[in-house]
Length: 230
Image 1: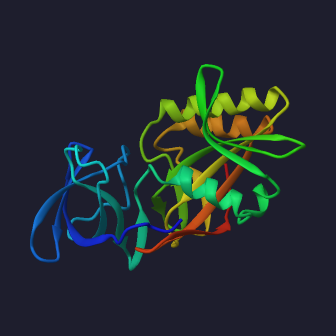
Image 2 (image 1 turned 90 degrees about the horizontal axis):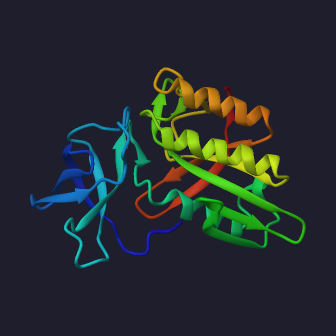
């Protein structure tokens, strides 16, 4: 996924009230940027670090910028949780994910039952339902999810189990928007219930695909599938 408009460089002053961040631009101007990440942002939050923000497209929006990425340990980490669905959907259409190749149509935010699934990929033979989660947390060389308790995430796993039981392909994609890791695991110490449900889903036939992405101010591109341990 390429950024349509040039991003704006600055440094992080602070994140506060979960959804807000103060950013100091290169010319010294202090602006407020929307933070879409509702988690703790553990291991990717460092005051004074370089960041990139994007200008809001809606002139009526209160916050005029969106925080896109932060530089930690000399590498960019994507923290905009509104982008992963688009990134993965584009990659599937472009046949960039071997595990999810061969689909001719991709739809986002598809209603199923009383909820919505992030992505529905189809061809003449099958329907593949895909949930996507953004991963930004790291411990040692392992990418971890979630970074805060997520009852919503647990519900999504349960929905994937039901989809699989109904005879369709069900996939849980973890989009890891940082390049300083070599494997993925659930963050058991943060959300034990999520970790238990993820293992149950896998045992029920739900596929787990951790995708590592290379993040830059120009684009976010999927690099490879990582191994995982439940």
